[in-house]
Image 1: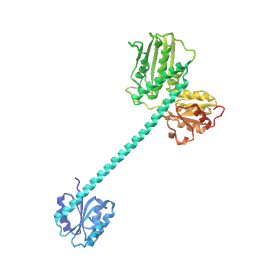
Image 2: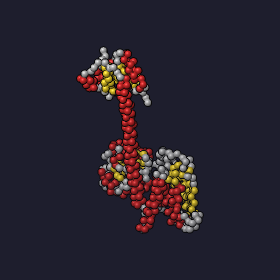
Image 3: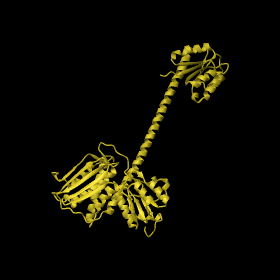
Image 4: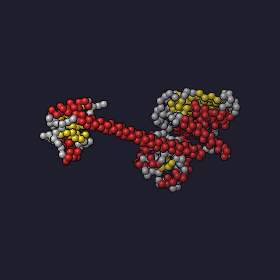
Length: 487
């Protein structure tokens, strides 16, 4: 144990030596002072556990010294024992206790009594210091635990907001599927909608299994092909390196693959028993390339008009993922190639994830005034928003799925208003909102998050929650002063 400092104060050197001899067996650190002023100097430089002080001293008596000791915050409770060669009256003893003394030893000093008294207060000092240390540790642990709980609550709040955001985005995609799907009769419509919903659900299940870290491309394709596998498995083939897709890419690509599989099952190689489908993907330095090869099915010709499935694939791959789609309408079967940039979207199973956001190379349309800019990174939601805007009597500028392209359009094009998704693949749309504010162009926010997280600068801007209803968008347009004949 660390030794306790015991301060011995007496103006007579012989008595100091006697105290030192008596207390030597305690094995503590003894500090001697021949005056009250010298004692104060030691108190300022050292941490003193017990003070043994003579009452009668010429410059500063024991009562005055104890009063000065008690004025120091560090020594408010330090044990002070009086030693006196003269008999103290009860009033003097009471005065000593009032000044802060804890005990009184008369002269002649009995060594055993003095040692016992000092030992008691040394032990008490040690226990007090140990309690202070334990209390400090306890307070630190409580503070750390409180900080951990606060951080956990913050993480829970963030997680709740993120879950809410994802749920609303998913509902917005579902709403887009329901509104944009076309069919000749109700059963066909229900079948088409349910198929697309299942594609979304399969991608969601894969992402849930990885805690939304990403989804395996091989498993995503296997899930889509599972209903068409035969017992010998010879009509389907899918091969390529291990690839992990980011969550937004997995859902988007899952819908695109579903549309290709559905088309093959209706009109292509999977519509007859002898048809064959081979899917091969390759991970190149800058892109993921997926080859779709049908053979042995009915003769294929280029369609006279673009169907919803083709529109969805192109909007998803080209519009949302900034990729490329090419079709080959060969008599032996459809040949299709999907190319998706890797940066920030696709990685090998052993690679590092990139947090960089791709810049779209798609240029905005050349339009005149009276249009509404649509900024939305979900391809289906963007298509639906464009459809709603057109139904309200406006033309669509865009849609734009990244901030940089939208900023260029906002600086060079004329339009009546804008509909802005607040979060574009993790990038906030506020810089674009600043530009529109400076130009005096009214705009509306659309988000899957709660409106209380909007930047205070835009507190007066209407905020619509996903999924958006046409009546809500119409009311928001009118609140922004857009022409009634258009809205």
